[in-house]
Length: 304
Image (tube, helix red, strand yellow):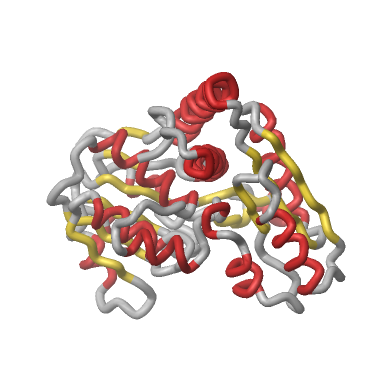
């Protein structure tokens, strides 16, 4: 069988950001609406700081209003909740994102629950999760939203396909399953307790791997011609022993790419697949939230 088609998430995300930029300009000139995103970072986790910086840069590049609140790691839960409440009541802010993880003394669920569901551009609020589960308009978590955009671009018509989602997290696995159900797929959600996981995966026309275990899904777990969406981003030692001994690392997904690419019909690489879609979908959710707040139609090419 020929090598699998590579699903270019980086390229798709660039196109989505361009459409978002055009939509923001249209909203500004036609409706006097400027989508605004506020990001809150508590503490100085290096990876979170880089991610927050990238979000701010891409928000500004899209022509949006961007605000970043950097709080000390010792910030109390009450102080953080007061800031969230201020942002809830700020008409210039349409999206609020509190960067996770939070310091251990803060109740993450309490903070996420305090965000106005209409501004919950991460899609983690129980109201958005509930609306998604019953098929009502909702702000969808960014990573599964990006996966779904890539799938629809790759497959076009998902109806009747058997999708297997490996992973049952509230952030990826569960919302991914809901989106696939809405696309009329037959959906199986597999996880660490699933018996004969490899056999379950081999039944999939669409396989979404979101477990956070490096290269767990092997080539012989994949049905010939299946579409594979690899959500995993895992750091492992560099291949070169000298580099590895020096602490150098490389990034791999949850799927053993080299094996899977010789069996699958299409596959996302890591890096360059799902990862770039996450921030692009955060911007898309912010535009969606701004349009709903203003009561104006969502410009074409932004959502599902």
